[in-house]
Length: 189
Image (cartoon, rainbow, N blue to C red; front, side):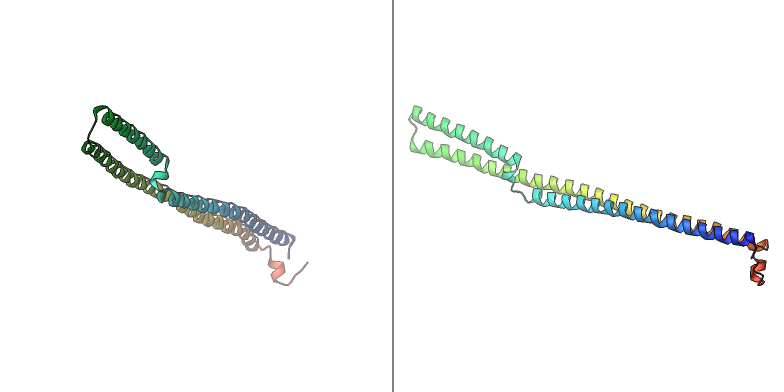
């Protein structure tokens, strides 16, 4: 084999080895980064699911808004009952008038319960809508990430194949120029 042929083969093998080693190292680093990114998506989705389950199934009267409405209603009812009692004492109201006043309070209480029920349903709809929007957004981001990953892998393999092809073209060129003639003809000088 001629010196040029040996140098070409050595250089080609070195180029192929360097390309493969570099691709392997880059792939390892990328795999670790991708694993972290996937875990991040999974954690965010899990956190969102937990938030949804907690918020959606929370008793409305235990929510900030529900507590505020209940306290406000209690204050108004106490004011109304105190006022009715005071008026009854001052005017010497009959038992029928007191019953009527309590009936009015009962109607207001029914209205309050109806309002609480509609507020609770409205809150659940809002929680569900926010959850679905955020989950869809996260799933779209995850799908885009996976799509980009697939594209990146394909590009990496194309690049590696191109590097190997370029290295082998040097061997082909040397062979075409007769650089391996001595080697193939049994002349190992």
